[in-house]
Amino acid sequence: MGLFQTAGAKLAYEVAGDGPTFVQLHGLTSCASREQRAGLDMTVSLDDCRVLRYDARGHGSSTGRAVPEDYLWPRLAEDLLELLDEVAPGEKVHAAGPSMGAATLLYAALRDPDRFATLTLMVPPTAWATRAGQAAIYQKSAELIEDHGIGAFVRVGRQVLPPPALADRQKERVPAVSQELLPSIFRGAGVTDLPSPEQLRELAVPTLILAWVDDYAHPVSTAEKLHQLIPGAQLQIAETPEELDTWPRRVARFIAAHPC
Image 1 (spheres, rainbow, N blue to C red):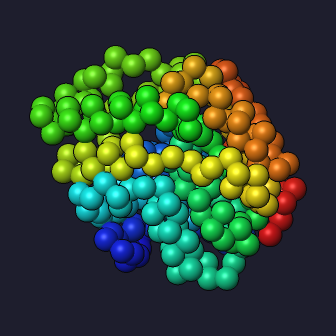
Image 2 (image 1 turned 135 degrees about the horizontal axis):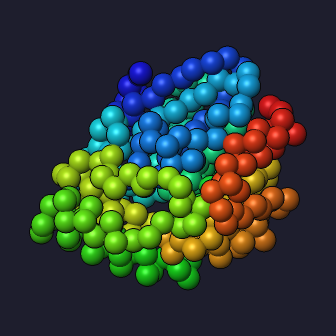
């Protein structure tokens, strides 16, 4: 595993395999090593790809600061583009990520569309009209952790039922984030949002959107709106674990149809 120095953080990353580069991102409070257990690792059906995985700042083995502004999605997109300059200089890449990872990809692709051969946006998060409610949850979570510790946050999380597509998977309850950084990460997430509809209408990268039902933090409404806005985007919605299991093969076919 390597470490890449960016502004205010060292990003832990690893590269494996040969071929066109495929970047696998992760979601809020997760890390690269957890995505396969959650069914969100899109590399399992890929052949002949060079896979780049990394932990976002403040997550997993990456370092970070207790500064909410460091965790805004445009800042995370800057981290990704800087890491790509280090690991895959001048190369067009495929990329996939859930939730926070999907948001990171959108900002990165809008800033440098020539960098990306494809985008796979998994379970896009609340956005625009639905973001305010989620922001309030993040603020309360930050206060709970500061007042009562990360254990109290984990206990509250156990009361939340997973979406049907995750019914056969054991959810990771303990965040892959330190108690010191987690309140700032939540506060940063609470004041960021997806790019504007006007910006997304200009996105010129082949995009696949994968969503699941009955998840208030990742509503189908966001996926459907992105499908409407992004030119030529494809959308698939999973309702069962069996449908979720088809995602890696779907991503492999999508990438094969759009070679670098």
